[in-house]
Amino acid sequence: MDEYLILMRLDLITKEAQPSPEQLQTYMKMYQDWVGGIAAQNKFVGGTGLSTEGKVIKSGQIITDGPFAETKESIAGFITIKAKNFEEAANIAKECPILKGEGNSVEVRKIVGVDNTR
Amino acid sequence: MQSSEILPHLFRNEYTKIVSVLCKHIGFERLEIAEEIASETFLTATESWGIKGNPQNPTAWLYSVAKNKAKNYLQRNSVFQNKILPEITKSLSEDLEPEIDLSPENIYDSQLSMMFAVCHPSISPEAQVGLSLRILCGFGIEEIADAFLTNKETINKRLFRAKEKLREEKILIQLPAPEEIEDRLDTVLSTIYLLFNEGYHSISQNKALRKDLCLEAIRLCSMLAENKITDKPPVYALLALMCFHTSRFEARQDENGEQILYQDQDINLWNYELIGKGEIFLNKAANGTKLTKYHLEAGIAYLHTQKEDTKEKWENILQLYNRLLQLQYSPIAALNRTYALSKANGKEEAIIEAEKLELKENHFYFALLGELYFDIDKTKSLENFRQAYSLAKTSHDKTSIQKKIDQFSM
Image (cartoon, rainbow over all chains, first blue to last red; front, side, top):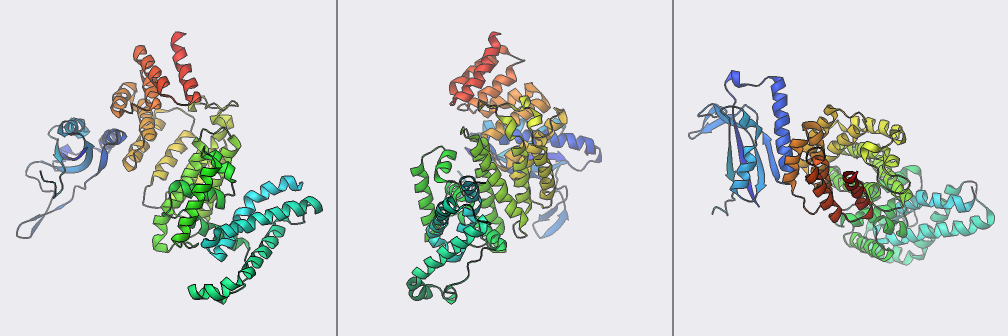
């Protein structure tokens, strides 16, 4: 089993895209059910949501308020999972409930250590 | 009470106190001597009380005999005390024949310190449970063997090795330093929980023994809750969890020792006093910032004491299982989570999730699938129940699955 990182990207900036408290509760349940299902297969390693506030530091020590976003979507959270291969990891990621929102995306990356950069 | 009735009762309670106090006094390296003195005290009591009848105050009688025996031992060992011990430690040589303190405070302190000593991470979890049963709960070797479904020799060996290890490592009988408390408390709590589970989930037929194990685990955890140094939120959470579980103890088994499923339990057999206590403890557990598995499991157990079968209840149970599995995976939690999912989100969704679990060696897995398919696909349901039957190991499990299979031919 290898470890994979699933990055979740949402539109955190546009006002209209922000969920109401009720919607947020529904989303949280869907999210928890999804992660719970991964954990029930013993494939959950770790992960968390991220605050919408952030700082971006660019070369030259320039600090700006983030989250840093080239496009509207920025990283809203991540989880790391165990999977046999990319295909399995992608299949798990496909069910991430944030994908129900238009324009949202998830990215799957295999985790490799510095001594394991094959 | 006749001496034949009162002694076994006193033994369970007082043996452990005498051993803890003596051991704290003479050191862990002489645990066996402390045990011997305590055993001899009870032997003397059996002989004396049998002839002269029970003393006015049996407990005080036991303490004074134990004290005298301990003093005699220490005097016999005066050579050791005078010549050898001062070389090893200076502090102990100062009080050559100190008063052995059997005051309630010292008994309490000694037992609490002993709890941390026998739950030292240098010995295996099962040895920790064994030693706790022996030294803190006063169980006989035979009872411990019965609880672990093994024989006396195995237990004797296991306890002997554990004591040797504690001696070699020079484990002190004292509460850990404040900065260590949290870590060490984790081990103590998991030992108490193992002890409890041994009583609650064991398939041993001895119901009285099993209930005793549960009550002893609650007693030990209560001691931690009563102390200002150890009364942390996880302690209250575990205490709440054990109260909620124990409240349903009588309802879980019929007179033939067969398990009664949750939905078929007679709620009149539930112990509402324990449920009430559990609620108080659960509130106290909510003080900290750290969410432990005990908090989550206590929450789940609390919801199970609410008999109403509402969607909200199962939704809450599902969310607690979601979080619990993220903290720590276990196949049973995964199966229970999937059952809660079927109640909260519907059977179709639960089947998809269940198929992913792939617990192909586990008969509960196939029994759950059989249950989920029951109203949806009779053929698949029966297939799964048959698979569950072929994997079930105990006759109890086989019988209850056979009942499910019989429903198909009706």
